[in-house]
Every structure is written in C-alpha cells, then in structure tokens.
Image (cartoon, rainbow over all chains, first blue to last red; front, side, top):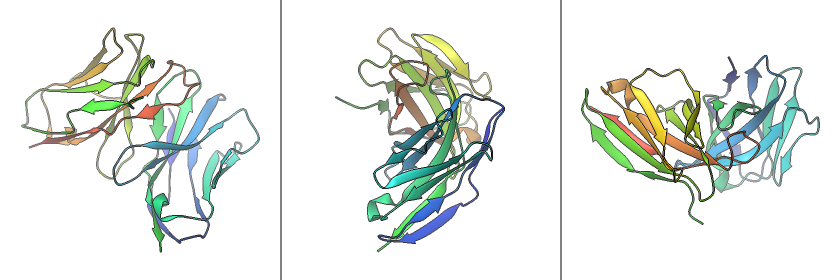
Length: 115
Length: 114
C-alpha cells in the first residue's frame, strides 16, 4: 500500500515571498507519478505540478517547482513570488504508473498568503 | 469545452437512506474516478472506471457501488447511509485509464447525512 504524509497542516507566507511545502511518501513501486494539487476555497481541485518518478530532473511550472528526492521518498513544492491567489489547501498525491486516476492523497497543507 | 460536471451540488439525506451521485466527464474522456473527501482530510479513492469497466476499487464497504454508462458518464451509489458518509464526493476524469494524461476534477457533491 502507498502512504503520503504532509507534516505541515498549516503554513503562511508573506506576499511575494517564497514558501516550501513538504511531502513524503512510502511505496514499494518503482514506476509512479507524484503530484501537487491545489484546492481553493471554491473547492475544485486544480493540478499544480506533476513529476514522473523515472525523470531525475525536477519539474517546474512558472512559479512552482518541486524538489524530488527519490531515494528519500520526498517531494516538496516550492512556490516563489507568492500571490494572494495561492491561498488554498495543497495536496500531495501519488499514483502508480498504469493505474489511471487512482490517486493516494496526503492530508493537505493549508497555505495562507498574507498581504 | 465544459469541465467535469457533478450533480447535485449539495444534498441532505437521513441515515439508512440511499443516494445517487452523478458525474459527467470532459468530452472525449473515457475514464472516471470517484473520491470521498471528509472535512479536513485528503480525498480517498473509491472507484475507477474505464470504458465502462471497473478498473480499481478502494477500501470502501459494499454499500458503495458505481457504474459507467456508454456516454462515459458515471453514477456513484451509496446504500444504507451512515453519519460517517457525510463528505464531499469528487469525480475526476481522464482521457484514458492509464494515468499518462492529466486528470481533471469536478467541483464535487457535498453530502450531509443526518
């Protein structure tokens, strides 16, 4: 079974500053994907960034980047130049390759961007 | 194109009743998955359907069932409702059932069991 752990229930950051959200996971699989999803107060889940486990290069999407440490089973999200619209719940998720939409989610980190 | 749609948005049921939740995937998407998100928790996987066949099932009791129709829409059914079934139920759709393509989530159905 896969488990995903997010040890920071709540975090806050000043607007325009940088913040890092932590995620660790446990799996015996070798082929998988990792994701960060954002769930704003309006509740629709939005994909932030995705990482294929076989790729050593860390994924980046504009202001969002990850630090993927496969041996340590760590997958942190860095948000640069934080904006008020980044305020949301952030979920780290694991998916075994080939299983489609079968995500395993962490418990989430509530991020508040302070003006 | 419309995104993933779910109906109803909210509903209130009484313990012991039955409920049906509906999901319409993005046009062209053939895979639908269902998740239960209890307040303050991350979503938990319930079912995945691809091409009208069940492809995966999470650790949920037999009171939970689902199906996918020829137009790829899906229903989630829950029988003999318990208070603990109160949650946000999310549907996600994807082009295929393999996870290669991005998954898109719907806005969810908020179920309250009293």
